[in-house]
Picture (cartoon, rainbow, N blue to C red):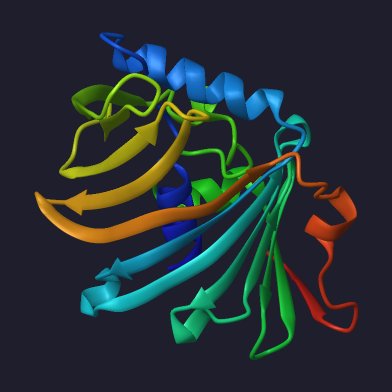
Length: 216
């Protein structure tokens, strides 16, 4: 569930001004991300995956130029202290309870998630949304403080979709909703969004040295 959740959540990182199109928004957010040396943020809220309501709380740290990212879970309890590290070639998922690290190729991880996404592109909005249709649902606020609501649906069809609220103040997401069959299955807030805070590749890749390695 963690790979699917992380991919879907992080697929919401898209984004506009005035009467611009949805694609204009996506391009602006993508440009802002690529211009950053590093990006970090927190996702928290509630979700109803696997037929049960769950609290979701995780942090993401990434270096866009290296397609390198780290996702660390605080909640739900089943995933607390689990960590996922992704780069261009592989996904390393650390499981706290068993002190194991599973290593999977990036493409295999994306295929297993069933989303057709490249898991390494957590902060490359344009690449991540290439297989999605994105439309602008609405705009609130005044100039300089506008927030745009976008909806992304798979070009292959289906009933799943994601809704993302983007602020033009920094061109970043502030809220993400995941829907399936018209029902909201996750509602998450993006907070503590930072760029150029000094995140290093060494810190992102760090995992317990005594963990058992399992290659898939």
